Length: 437
Image 1: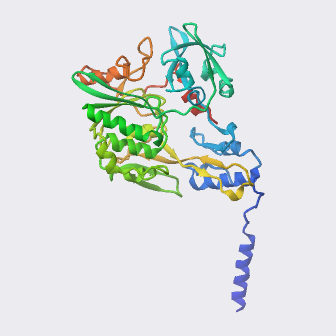
Image 2 (image 1 turned 120 degrees about the vertical axis):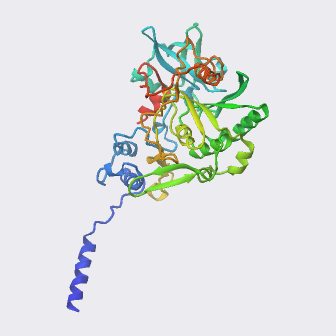
Image 3 (image 1 turned 30 degrees about the horizontal axis):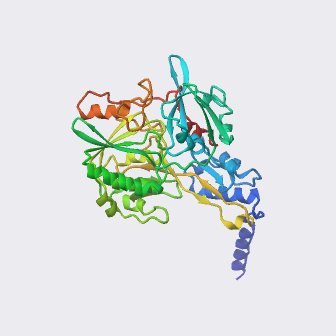
């Protein structure tokens, strides 16, 4: 009995020495940062690089970014209703974007996209327009430390090369998923052309209508334009795949590899489709009946093709012939998960925090992935190879012409190595993603 008593006393001593979790007041930076660290420690891909858990009174956004690996450019944090934590882009603020490029040793700004229905669109700004000044300055956005401040301006004054001045108001611009679709005829073949700005189920019914129209029109080939697509909902990537590609919905779509705590898992097209947002109930057989099972896809890509858009290129390869045309993609070969702060750590009326850390590396069914430097296009093409940028879907677009040349047997240059991103060509999408921290 004496021996047992000593053992029990010793165990009691050990448990009494165990450090209890420190309790902080609800709503304080300390308790929010504690939740951030614990969430990251459990889920973050690079959790082994995290500093030791300790009390922090830092602003939660600054604290979160201090935890990130040097390899991580994409994890984010926002607070609901706190605009200072949001990421901004030219598209979602002013309804257009522009790219800096060099011609004859002269830096120029050219509009590369205009959001359909936005104020910029209604005022007459067009893709391909040359901009002389923005807010009366010659702006090289990736070199201008004050450029981010323009997103908070009530309006933007743009001077076009023909002398016309546009006063474009700031707004919350909702981008349509589909910018343009059309049927192009070349070499006795019909090409369905489809430009997708991002992946979101808000465009699901419109996409079904477009694909059904392609079916009625007797389209032979599909040109999927993802050159400025930053990704979006992964479940929409499965939705799109089931509509346009010839595949088995029960086949593996994604292999996900997480940290040592999460491990690895595989998901089929059906599994990923089932993650569609509330209010949508699409089934794979329904989509495949309405769609066209192309055995070959032409995909237009570039340095702003990212995330779920890259997933279409890499993860359909085991099932469909993918012919990508353009430049290397951005190289976001990972997926994130959104974590919402629990109510008990917040004060009444305090807005919740949303963490979106990178959690998984993504691979296809054949274990192909690791494209942090971008996915190499099958054939190189430069949309700036002509003297102007043409509207999306134009048969004069160099990327579309390259597709046509492939179709008629014209010799094309096969890409054998990654193209480095031209330092003299950068869009605000690229700038936004790299500088959002």
